[in-house]
Every structure is written in structure tokens, then in C-alpha cells.
Figure 1: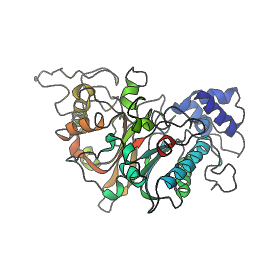
Figure 2: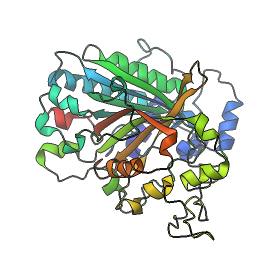
Figure 3: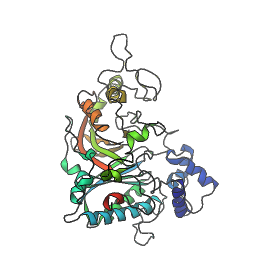
Length: 419
């Protein structure tokens, strides 16, 4: 993996000197000092990008990029439906084109290997931690004649009481997640993916998101959502022994599903936050809804952000310090039979209506080895009494099978489409 990454970087940037290597070592976290220095030095159009721009992610890997990649500043989600008459042959050709495109773009190269046909949007930038992640929806298997290879994990999600789903912005045969630490790099990739779809597939829906830019804080921190809360504190950590078991599909399953080895399942939810209602709550009431301090994400029972919840702790009034219906309590793995998922969201803001209400919230993305053991049981429990639910509206939804990363010479999904 490291070798492929370094080859890609050299291909884009040439040999990196000692100062450049030090910048790359900062990774997606990005040092505040380095970022400030880059911002103070206008580009002359020559030389290598700053550490923020030069950081790259490998295309060829055990798992697709964009799953465990640190949160990126800009993101686009786009779903496609295969065009009428398109089937397995057309889908395979499309995935081959998209994969070749992703390999080039993630290395910081023009879309066609030269600047001739490239739009030029990202010519001045390096890879900027660009990732493209590809998945398949349930309908993809009907359209390609591969119903026998459709995982049972793609069964439709159950209905939830907070759902107000727009079918036009839900589902899809194919799904692409694009993330980068530069807005122009991310848009360049989105436009290239759309153009490369050609006549094989058409856009069903598309959404735009953002996170805090790496380097904007004094040190790497858990991201905040638009409610001001730290979002992702309880995520499983790659260092944990059971991380892979919870997030990725193991090898050795049924032969018809072997193409999903080292892959994952992603649930996408466009969750509108009713910010006007939320912001009317006093700080202490907001914290009781969540079960954590807003300032640092620590449990109301004390400690720091990473301190375990003391769910049995009571106050002088005999009531739980973390209320019965607090979001952190209800969603905690120990309250859900160990169910866990890797949250990797983007915030979104799609303008302010004539009534003055912002259309803003969370492009919720969670990754797991089995959504029926990850997202579904937790969401069912939240649906029955989460104090946060009155401030949320689920407006779009999707569930996609994301195969493992390709080996050198392969395209994403080849083991399914040519197996």
C-alpha cells in the first residue's frame, strides 16, 4: 500500500525533498503552522503543492479508500441508475473507466493522462487526499443479471418514524463517494465521474457536503456537526482488535458473495437538522439531550471525550446523570448488544428558504460489515425514544455494497462482474 502511494506521489510531484516529506508525514491532520505558511505564500504556478495538497491516498489497496481515510474537508455523494438497455457488459465497461479515472485523479494526474482534454479545474493542486469510493445498490443486481450474487445485507432498510424520505433522492444502482481536502479537486473529480458515465448511466441524485479543513484547529480533533456537537466520538478505532470484524466483510463466505471480501456496507441518510428549534434550547438542555458536554465531548458523568460513559451513575435526585433518553446512552454499543458502526459523515447546507429556515444538516454515512447488525438495531432503538429525534428529519436514504479495494491491474467490482 505504501509503495503504491509513494509511486503515485512521485508520478505527480517528482522527487520530494526533505521538507516535502516532513509535510507528507503530517497526513490528513495537517499542521496548523504548515497550513498557515502555505496560505501566506501565493502560488506562482510552479513548484510542489503544500503538505495539505500533496497528501495522497492509494487506489490499489485491501479496502477502498474513503472508508478509514480521515475526514476530508469537501465531499460529494452521487448515485446513478444504469440507462435503459444497459446491463452487465455496460456496467463492467463503466466500472473499468471509473477505476482508471480514480487511479489517475487520486495520484493528482489529469483525467486523460495529459492536460489536453482535462477541464483544468485542478491543474494547480496536488491530490489533496482525494478519494473515490464505489458501491452497488440492490437494483444493480437485477439490471446486470447478477441476482444470485446480491448480498442479503442489501435487503431494504425498515421504515422509521422520523422518516420523510424523498424517493427521488434515495437509492440508486451505483453510488460514488468523493472526498478531498480542496473544493476544486473534489468538484473536478465529480465532474469527471459524471462525464465518464457517458450513455451507460444517468445521475439519480447528487449531494454536497463539507467538514472542517485539516489544520484549522491547533491539533486534530473529532469533527463537529452543525448542532455544534462533536460527532464520531464513539467510533470504533482501527487499533481495536475487533475493528475489522465490525467494519469489513471477512473472506471465506459463500462463493456467490466472495466478491465482497474486504468490502463494507454503507448506509447513507440525509438528515435535516431543525436548527431553529435546537438553538432555542439552553446549553444544559442540549447537553442532556446528547449526554455529553458540548465544549469537549466528555460524558456528563465526567472525564474527557474518550472517557467511557458511566451509565449507572446517578445524581442527588436519584436520576441518571446521563438521562434515559440521551442520544449517547441509547446509541452506545453496550446498550445495543455490541452493535457498532464507523460514522464518517459530511455536513451539508443547501440554502435558506423564504421562511428563513436553513436546509442544513448531516449527510450521515456509516460503515459496517452487516447493516442488519450495525445500523438497523441502533436506529430502531433510537427511533423508540431518542431525545434528539424531535430535532431531526430523515429526508433521503441509501444502502450500498462497497466491494474491497482492487489489486493492481483490476477495476473495482471486477470480481463480481467477471466472476
